[in-house]
Length: 171
Image 1 (cartoon, rainbow, N blue to C red):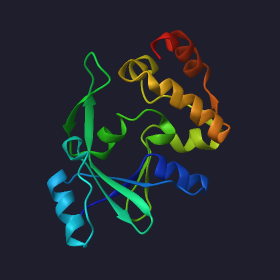
Image 2: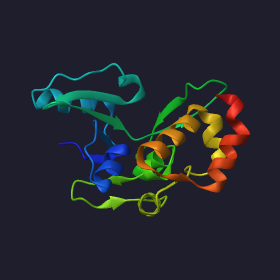
Image 3: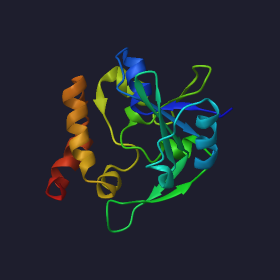
């Protein structure tokens, strides 16, 4: 029995009351433990992302992915070095935007260290932490900010918009 948290866009979409495309979970369990638990329930694990901590499987007609809590350390490329951690808040702190940095435990309790729920209600896009750092880690996050804004009719905060303009050349 794994301790699981629904995370990221899955939580965002649930709060917004919209159908989510997939189910994303996070756990303190190791990738090997995740794979074993999936096999134990009679499902075939997808292990393509296992070295990064992610093991997936089909749940009814949906893809479910379970990822070990992790942090990411970026070097000179967009490919981060993954380090497993044992804390959900540390895992959430690596995420791109506050509205994607929430988790829900099995009892439905919201874990929201970066005020993503308030940003959802306000309809704003805000980077987690320092926007310049988040953009330098992965410049495609600027495009994701635009997609979030368009998809949900959100407005980027002035600081978000400013940093995207400053860094647009990195795309």
